[in-house]
Image 1 (spheres, rainbow, N blue to C red):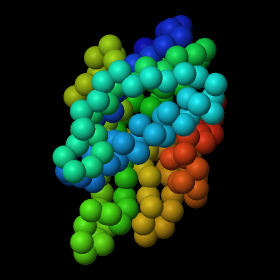
Image 2 (image 1 turned 90 degrees about the horizontal axis):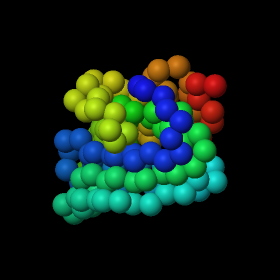
Image 3 (image 1 turned 90 degrees about the vertical axis):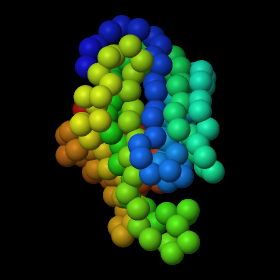
Image 4 (image 1 turned 30 degrees about the vertical axis):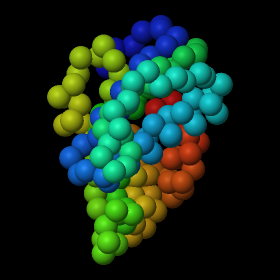
Length: 153
């Protein structure tokens, strides 16, 4: 991670393997970052996106602008894991899916797939756990709606 004083970053989200579930997870993360930007007084704009097959997004790039954006977003780089009952599974089974979050120009790419940042567990219990600092929340809906605490401060 390289810190800079830029007032804008391009955040890229890539769905992992898993078809519709991972594509939906990438879409959910996009919404989370858009809501966080809005709540933080930052602006966001989708630059590019590739639709998933049947649901969600295979990948998306979003520009987020405003003071302090780099310092906050560089903490998000890595793998985000979701555990839930799949809305795409006729048998309503629990699925685990992954998505990669990366800042454009960082060049970390493949390395980041080996670095899990956070787990979002929606079943069988409700928990968000930041694996870097051990922070936990029992309110995953709030986190996914962009209501983040200041992790790492």
